[in-house]
Each structure stands twice: as C-alpha cells, then as structure tokens.
Image 1 (spheres, rainbow, N blue to C red):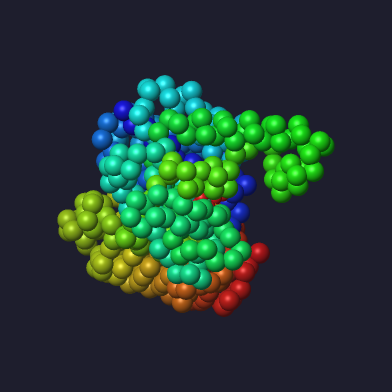
Image 2 (cartoon, rainbow, N blue to C red):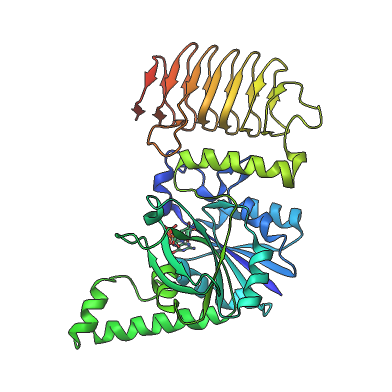
Length: 409
Ligand code: GDD
C-alpha cells in the first residue's frame, strides 16, 4: 500500500498571497476552477494501491472540512485533514502524525508541497524509486540560473541520479537543478527525522558546554520539534546513497504570488485539454457564448450568449456575465457580476465584486512583476466606464475614478 501526504501550511505562510488569502486559505484558491490542492490530490489518484491521502496543516479544521468530505466521495479514496497545533516545519509536520500515516503499514509515502503546479508524475517517480533503492526520490527540474536561488539547489549524479549535494536557497550559485517539492519516501524517513530532532535536543543541552555546538545551534534558533525537510534532512543525507532524483521535463511552477497563480491556472487548463476535456467549456455546445481556447465555466455561472471568453479564463460559481463582455486570461471568483460590455484582461476578480457597464480591468500580464496583473479583492465595485490598469485593489473598495499602477488600500 501507498499513502500520500500534502503539506498545506497555514495562515501565516500566505502573506504574499494577499489580498486573495484574507478569507480563503491559499490551498483552496481556485486554479482552473478547482481548489489549488485539488490538482495534487487528483494526481495522487493515479498512484497504484493508494490507501489514503492526508492534508497536513495548521489552518482551522473547519476551513477544510467541506472540501475534504466532498473530494473523498468524488475520488473514492479517504482524504483526511490533520491539523497541527502549531507549525512543526515541513518534516516535523509529517513526523507529528507518523502514527496515523503508518496506520495502513504503507510501503511508500508520497510527500507533496501544496503550492507547486506541475503534472505530478507520481507513478513514474515510484517506479524510478524502486529501481534506485534508498530512502527517497525527489522530483527535480532545470530552471534558469538567475531564478535557481529561490529554491533548493542540488547536484545529482548524471548516471545513477543519486542526490550528491543539496543547499536550500543558497546565496552563491550551486546548480540550476532544483527541488520541485514532490517526494516519495520509504517509512525510513521517520527514523531520519527522529534522528535529527534527537540530535537537536542534544545540541540544545550542550549549548553552554561546547562553543562549537553553540555556534551551530545559534544559526538555528528554532524549537527542537521544528524540522525542515530541506535543510535538516535533505542536506545532511545527500551523498549517502539514500536519496535520488527524478527529473521532469514538463511544466513546473511554485505558486507564491497571485501573479503566478494566474499563470498556473492557464497551465492546468491546458492540462485539462489532455486529461479532463469534459471540464472545459465549448466542447459540448451547452454554453452558447463564444469560447476561445481553454476556458472553465462553473455550471452555475450565467454567461450571456454575446460574451466572448478566452483563452485561459476560469469562471467560478454564480458569476453573471453580461452582453458583449470580453474576458481574456483571468480568474473570476464566486458571485461576481460583470455588466454589459465590460472587459477583463490578465486579472483576478475577487468574490462578490462587480464591474459596471464598459468598465475595464486589465494588466500587461507580466506574472513576475508586482503590479503585472490586476487584482480586485473581495467585494470591490468598479463603476460604469471606470478603467483599472496594473493595480491591486483591497477588499470592499468602490472605484469611481480610473487608476493605473496603484495599490488601493
Ligand atoms: N503542515 C505544515 N507545517 N506545512 C508546512 C510547514 C509546517 O510547519 N512549513 C511549511 N509547510 C509547507 C508549505 O505550505 C509548503 O507546501 C511546503 O511545506 C514547503 O514550504 P517551505 O518549507 O516554506 O519551503 P518553500 O516553499 O520556500 O521551498 C520548498 O519548496 C520548494 C519547491 O516549491 C523547498 O523545499 C525548496 O527547496 C523547493 O525548491
């Protein structure tokens, strides 16, 4: 048997995701019309002999309750949310719930970061891991040398694929091969985490005795039950024939900002074309609006037949789209109203917002720039004919003048 664990983190981690994380936990923010965490969960469904999926985080349980029960029914695999009383780190959180994870005596444990967007080649990783042996195999990808320092950089043996060296977000360049945050481990991983926390306890006790130990513990002033997978486990185990790498040649993104989430929504829509074309609008002829490229429209949304939508648009529940509306490259969240002839380009429109007639909400679409996409927070009103360009508008604002390159607080 195999189990999967998805690390969802908690509220303090979502600050870069504002203003979209005010009321919704980031893992439930919709990409391609499905909660972010839905994409790794449905990838887990392809793992042979999958017994259970656990989500581990420190968000309130009730925030995940509804989603967890509906996805369990849909996938016919038990999905459980396990809440930490406080953050234990990416490895500490796993260790904290070891008894529940090991309940079914799994031979392998998948561990996935919730905030990555890729096609999760999990069965291929498991097969590669069985060939390599060792304690774990991690998904890796080549990125540009300039962007590599935002991630864990690593060196792998070109023949055996063994992880030889690992440094988390190094200041000086090590390698353009990086950690994707997707792993498969044997249960030995728990022994490794236990080893680290015991060592940390010893180090803490010795602090006043040995200046060498004191030096090392100073650089790590974290509680002893806080264990990070990358720095505390991967780095020391590199080069010990325990960890191996599996390189993906497909897409991969880390979802830290709303800008990147817009890009990831498009990537997942493109993937639906291959994996779940029934989720895309236009194929079945039931929506009479003009649809261009990959578009998701929630069944409860009401779209006027003269609207023109796409490519890369995702429309959530109960959205109303008026006559002559044009939507390109955007995420429109629940209960939004878009009146006649309004235009939305490269933007995210928050829950319950409304756009007046001929209003324009747009941006140039540079996903990495601070104001490269326009974001309207929850319940923002854009009045008739108002233009909002490359701006972020915080919740509950009413715009009656046009703005450009502004953050409206
Ligand atoms: N449950 C729980 N508890 N989850 C946590 C905790 C915790 O205390 N701390 C972090 N996480 C979750 C986050 O939500 C995220 O899904 C994952 O663990 C990793 O988060 P971080 O430890 O903050 O690392 P990161 O996202 O900056 O970078 C990691 O992922 C990159 C790939 O996306 C590193 O492993 C990098 O090396 C890697 O490139």
